[in-house]
Length: 77
Image: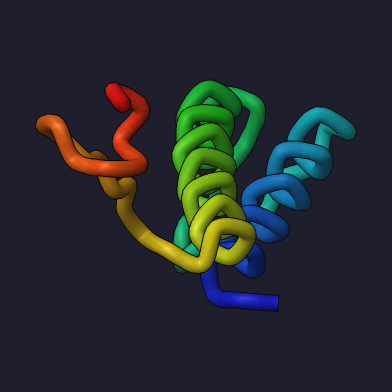
């Protein structure tokens, strides 16, 4: 696991605990049902980060490459 997936797992566990009616300690704070929207927002942010990280792992690149112009192999032959 990476730090990113660890954080996502923490947010998922926190969300599940609060949905079960528990009060939890998370990042040094006491959270209850009133904090559910905040936890969900954090979970969604970490889900996006994990998706980006996994996309980079699949492609081997952290960016896209584009070719412009009339060069062989650019699709405008």
